[in-house]
Image (cartoon, rainbow, N blue to C red; front, side, top):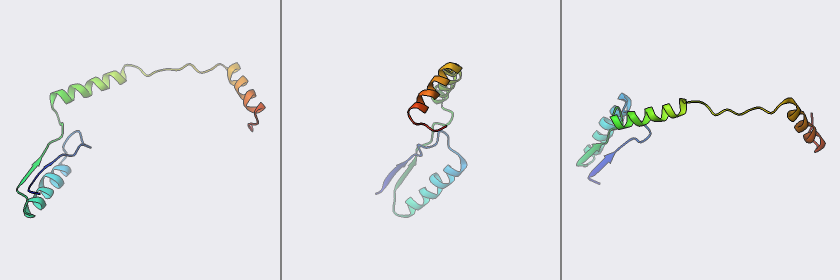
Length: 90
């Protein structure tokens, strides 16, 4: 293999550790093993479309949490009685 393109899809931004280990150390190992072309594909980092998408996801999920009404005490008691009648232990 003479050419390789490398990306780290588990990261949304490049960190120094990734850049050092992948873009520097792996590049050096590849090229010193007769590789000819090594291309590191950067993460999304601060690209405007990514930042806008992430902001949209955050706004969507921070708009309000779904709520659920808890059953009233009578419903809970009836449910417990049914469970006991079917053999549940207290």
